[in-house]
Image (cartoon, rainbow, N blue to C red; front, side):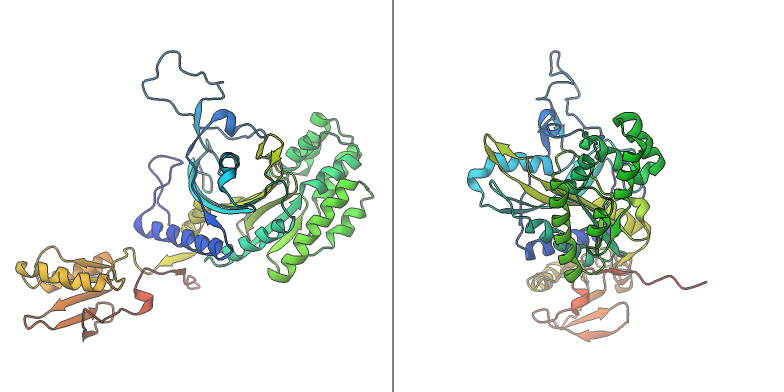
Length: 451
């Protein structure tokens, strides 16, 4: 189980917990690279004006200041004041604009970094956490098929992790905005923000917001909620939307795009991707496809992966860089994996072999053995003291090291598997542990026995 951090909202991992996080990161990195995404890293600090330039956010942004602030420093409202980034998408847009002359488009990037938000700490919500993003950005245009591809990449990446089943819920902003216009609601951004609160506050309260804050009639509010109630794993949502009797060009464009995502996902990731017309995403820079992902049976955790299409987030004069991306909340996902005991690590240290000492004068020779083993990729420690072999074996057992190496006075070697007790002759120039023991393995935990 994940240990509670001493500073709320800023998690720290024990060694075995960190192994789980590293496993998740390795799986994501490997999957992203298999699909041709290249890695970048952006700075942790942006100007406040850059961070807040596209749409309002409901998260506190951590501004930077020295402990001994000087008089006359930039005020709180100064857009040039520096702050820690709260996501990776907005900094990435700035990165694309500034480096466009050095990038090949469409540019496929993945990025794994820490971000900071003023969240109220609880499981799944931290103030410092790791995100893993993938995006494709074009120069002037970006074919819609990238919206389809990203849903499939994420389905593959999450499907390779030892986690419960999940659902990628997809909607399209064009569909929603076209529908709202068709029923006479012109503040489509306001309607989207209200619908985005549906799962938190319920349909009745959302209807009140639509009426009281946006001037919607009862009929308009009910129509918006009827649209948000549609969920299908196939393209039957198209006819369900049309049955609501609204006709609008933008609506039809959104229906066609969402149908393309759902149809292809049904072929390549059956049961994993569904059309959910309640998904809105609160950030205003999304312009088309939007995604949210939940763990089945753990929906209260919130979305573990979300994103969408943004056509105007990055621009330079008349040049625009439309993109589509998804972000996995790695810390949120790892916290739930650990707290629910979904996985276990085979050991808590990378070390596969402890080389023992027969006496204090054998330390240098033991280092020679270790060097031969390490040259073949085997993680090795050398004992620090020539204690009785029983104590050296206990040290290895306490550390979780599976093998102990012995060198006799005549120069021969033996290696002991301290789990089984088997001890066999070994050559430091050729011996290899079983593949499953070469490095710590993270695997699905065995189910608890029935009571």
